[in-house]
Amino acid sequence: MDPYTVYHKDNLYYPFASRQDWELGSFLLCSSLSMAALDEFLGLELVKALSLSFHMAKELCGRAELLPPVPKWQYRIVSTTHPTKQPLHFYWHDPLDCIKSLFSHPFFANEIDVTPQRSRLPDGATLLGIILSSDKTNITNMTGGRVAHLLLISLANIKMATRNKASSHAFLLTALLPIAEFLHPVKRMQSVLEARLVHQCLDIVLEPLKQAARIGQMMSDPLENLRYCFTPLASYIVDTPEACMLACVRGKTSPVTMAMYENFGDAFQHPPRTAKTTLEQLSSIVCDPLDVKGYFDACAPFRLSSVAKPFWGDWPLADPHVFFTPEALHHWHPDSKPSAVC
Image (cartoon, rainbow, N blue to C red; front, side, top):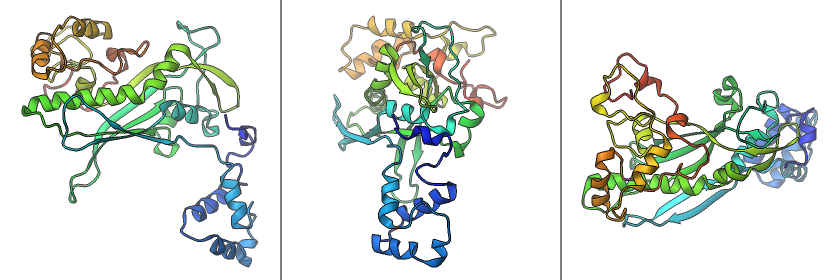
């Protein structure tokens, strides 16, 4: 908990005096100027005339150290059951730290809804709906074709009008999922192994949120009130191909209903593809998942992608047919192709 939250009620930019004070301090701290050069700059008569909260480089650095801590990067090399062309480097922030940072941020003091709702949670508990979003993003096109698979996190409790503003910074980067080149001779099986890797990494990074969803976690809100919080997965924003991958189903299969490609023109709504249904289908398959081709063939009658351990399988209340947010481009646009989910 930030011990200086009480000061943020009157001054959002504490320990700096104002927004202008913070902007200048941030600029100087991010510059390549030495401590001596900073002292020389702050000693100028023009700068002295400004109502700054710092007058020496040492004082500026001292104020910076009072700023709330930010989530720290973590790192590990991910091991896989099948060989890859290069080692898989995985970087991530603790998502629980990201949620604590958002939930306690004074900027959202009047933008967060914590109204109690009827649920299976203990009396007095606060429900913090987790929003995730992921997609592959090209970093370079002309120099190596570098690609990153970003995982972003936000809070459903933040008002939508505020959360959707880029200037609010309500979505935080929580992980850089590794992108592997598997050495399996069958290209289709390489895609299967890549999907398993994504679920494996999501399982690693999201474990703290799963624990908080099971037993709760004490967190401080923007007004410094301690709340007993639970963190179910409320929404996962992805495009249709990634939704199928995360729902553990094959292409041309709905990730949210039991409809397959032959049924996409039906005039009625198909039953939802619940987490219970998918997990029961996976548990009924007797083939060893390490036999990728054999397991893939065994999953064919269920239209499953052969991901044996979905990341959401042990997340309380997580259900793909609930947390997948409809993608307007493919689901509602009148000119969308038949790959749309029905």
